[in-house]
Image (cartoon, rainbow over the protein chains, first blue to last red):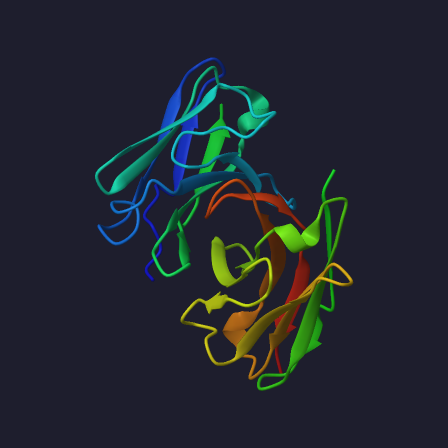
Length: 110
Length: 119
């Protein structure tokens, strides 16, 4: 159960778009359309922002979108806002009811 | 709004035991699978354990298998994590998380309970 690979940090200016990648293997990301993304502000619990690769829970802004190609999933945030500055984690089903998270990406809004 | 409230965290010596509880409210607890996820200080999230809605099925991450036990009492809407043979590397904030629309979709989280393992 090795962690999924995410860039340690990304940055962007308000109004811009950024994409965070999440690379796994054929045993997790590549095998299941069960990738979710979480946003975590400092000192707070994570919050679900995408599930099943590209589905948004009720109340989550449509500025957040997701996709997947092969063993890599991606989170795109468009129209960056200062409140988007946070840590972002991907998570994938890995079979037998086990899950694996990515190492996390710190998003800085300049 | 769903509420999940963890308790039972604290400081314990290596080799010791601790039991975390997660009190659930404002949703039908017995209808949902639950999980524990942890986060070491300054580190990323790690999935720890899963339990089905009935409690009849459980799964664990390899690094806690044989040491931790997840359980639930649907009569009092409470999730548990019994942690034995604790190691320094188990130091983390432990979150209980409700499984939402699909597997790997945790739509509600508790505020977390800090477990510190140190001599």
